[in-house]
Amino acid sequence: MTPIQTQIAELKDIHERRQFLKTLSTAVKPLIAEGTFENVNDAITGAIYSLEGHTTLKTYEQWKSEGKQVKKGEKALFVWGKPKQKDKAEETDEKADKFFPLCYLFSNLQVE
Image (cartoon, rainbow, N blue to C red; front, side, top):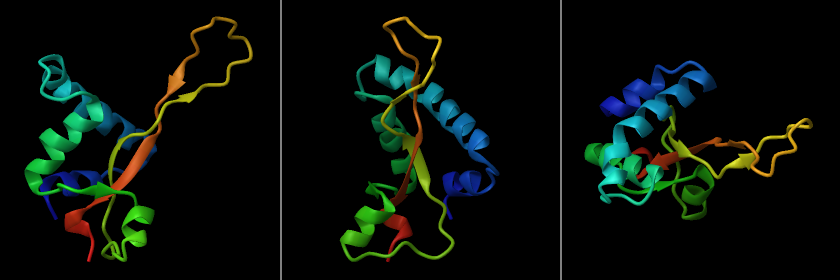
């Protein structure tokens, strides 16, 4: 297990996972500002996950469609998913709040 996988395995719930991902996002913001990466997910995967050998990240279903199986006991790595609009009945403003879910991915190191 790589150090990042060990940290992820210790996270107990979705709130801790979101906070962990927010911390990673804050850490890579300078790389986005200087133009090294285009967005937060690219920066997290390129500057953090790839340093430990996690070079190819896919969903469980994507690995399965390629005939690969995620090793038993592996914990998913995560990035931000596509934003969803929050439902607010009282909100009349044109700008709606967005909610970014977590997207769970497995790496080339986690499949066989």
